[in-house]
Image 1 (tube, rainbow over the protein chains, first blue to last red):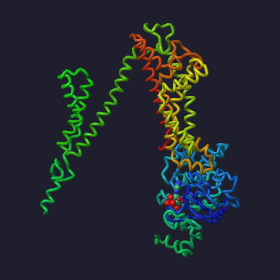
Image 2: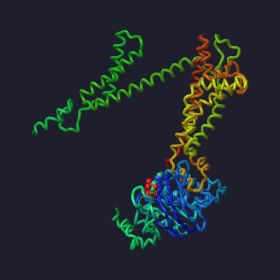
Image 3: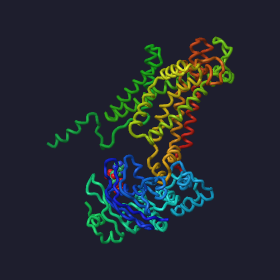
Image 4: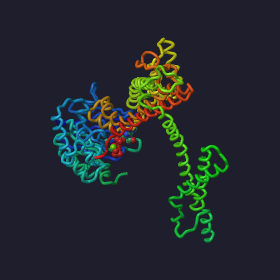
Length: 259
Length: 361
Ligand SMILES: Nc1ncnc2c1ncn2[C@@H]1O[C@H](COP(=O)(O)OP(=O)(O)OP(=O)(O)O)[C@@H](O)[C@H]1O
Ligand SMILES: [Mg+2]
């Protein structure tokens, strides 16, 4: 199921603005990799290049290679739609579909793709995904109520359920807890711990403790100055990054002696 | 030194009463605006009647001026200049509101009271066939059929084209082509209805040698309707948050399916309202009908062949006949037209409410 990601020489632009430059890294399968770094250094941009969402932005352009188990996502003839089915994404702000019920939200990935799935089968998938997202107990009695009627934390877990319902092999999460209270955050962190058994997970976070708690490896991004492209400073085992990083800038950032 | 400094602030705020606390200021009681309005009305009517002004409108305007001036003067005395300005603005808003509502209400009142005298089942189910315009009787059935068919065909043409154009502009349109389309839509919005009628007349009837028909009128109505549909749909699509599109795309849903299954359903309430309002707008058009549908006294169920009538045309025709019986029919037809537009509005609101994204539990 889970796949390895190999990025080499990746540069991304917004129109003529170069947002990230020459990034190379490897993300191991069945592990959690955290991205940390100051605001505007291109973490979200980089994350979105991993499932070809970057090019959805007007003017978005990518150079370089992203190998998903030896298959280049940016190779000729690769369909971005099938890339996104393989590499799922959870956004910073919960964004359930407002016209759909909780059930329909979870089933959206399958139904919107025109999949002809029998009702019983779909029921099973929805239940499994909601259980996988730790939300089943809270919503099992109101599956037909609107998804927008849930609390923020529940909505975010609904979005996670929606993303895992299509059985992706990689799950990208862009600050999934930034709008949540500590209890919901803890629920989602536990969830990430469970999900990594099945998926390759990449998570962007501004919370150092969170990165230290959930991730196996941590990548630190930085930018030289305003208007400069963001770059990968180093990527290493989380323990090492937080105890004994090999670059001074990483230590400064983590210990708050930044800028 | 210090005395001068102390004196200046109190001198700088003329009219402000000294009170124990600077946060407390005298206020007019809550019923004051209503009382001033009543007094202004009474004085306005008194002066109007006393001076022998014949028009009620003059009485009303007099009362409005007195109300605004009275509010301002009283508030300045009691509350100070800043509050008085606030009251002045509030009273002006009220007066403008009334100025807008009075003609509207009197229009509906006039139409209902004059139109209801001949409006009955027979009026709705008969045409003017065999009825002389100076006779009472006859009906509006042929005009209702004409309006329904012409407006229906115009909607069937304009709504899909307008919808697709708006989707193109919001979801796909970049660069020159999109700018050109937007420009032409803007230009079309400004086309007077008579010009749209002349355009269809010259190419459909004069050049291609087709006869008068409801369909010819529908084409002109569609030209008028299309830009309105494009504009309103565009606004509604722009209101759909980008995050929803991204959420759907990130699930591996192709763009066209995202538009069809996520964007359109989210905006459908507003889109339907926009289409209904544009239908209501063209239902009242008479100029293209006069040019292209020609008008008829008889029932013609076929919109593609021969002259038809329509409600606005019927009203014009009956009014032009100029006798009591035809005036009655004109008012009754106007009432039917208003009811038709009103029903469309209610339907649009119903759809909007029914389809609106639900946030409740
Ligand atoms: N849609 C866009 N159009 C143009 N420039 C953009 C766009 N989105 C981001 N950028 C630019 O790209 C750079 C990287 O932005 P990005 O959102 O990836 O940063 P980030 O590391 O995720 O920051 P944060 O931690 O605040 O989320 C920034 O300089 C930003 O101004
Ligand atoms: Mg970001």
